[in-house]
Image (cartoon, rainbow, N blue to C red; front, side, top):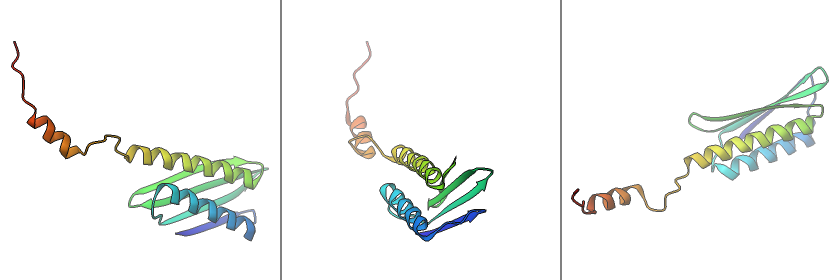
Length: 118
């Protein structure tokens, strides 16, 4: 996975880049087998640091999150938690919670005899 980390009006040191890279890779790896790319943008606005995260995990599947805080680490932590929450909710929607396959249910319904109505 390619990760682009950008700082606008703020410098991002190598140690923090490593933390961001590890967190994004583990977050994407939890819910999706292969992620294509990710972007992290840190912007200083007045006294706050705004963080924009975007991760592209498949064809047409992108997740974004945004957070702002006084500290860059806190801002990234909040944005990463929101991103993980969105990925978890999307994965939950994709999961089929029925125990029998769809084709087997249709075959069982067709084989069941219909009772005549009185």
